[in-house]
Length: 85
Image 1 (cartoon, helix red, strand yellow):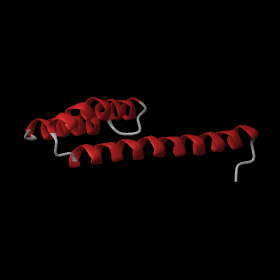
Image 2 (cartoon, helix red, strand yellow):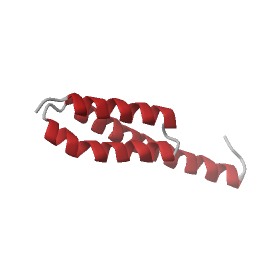
Image 3 (cartoon, helix red, strand yellow):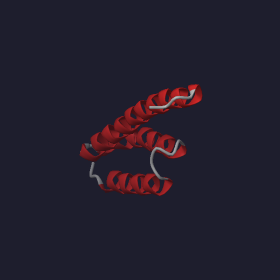
Image 4 (tube, helix red, strand yellow):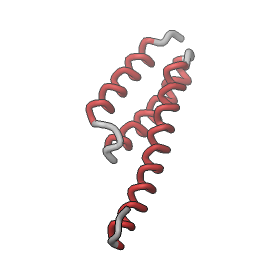
């Protein structure tokens, strides 16, 4: 266990950030899953910008890699465009 005051604070900060990052990541994964399961093109087209925004925020905060974010956005956009009316 850490002995220095600053190390104890760092442990507290890391734990809080870890939990926050897990929450954001799980929320985005759920949104992606909902979008992938959507059958209606109109509804999916409305959801897509919101999901892309969530993914961009994760990449900006280094919760996911920027290339993974790009791949996700590309695949989701292709999926939405391939949906029938």
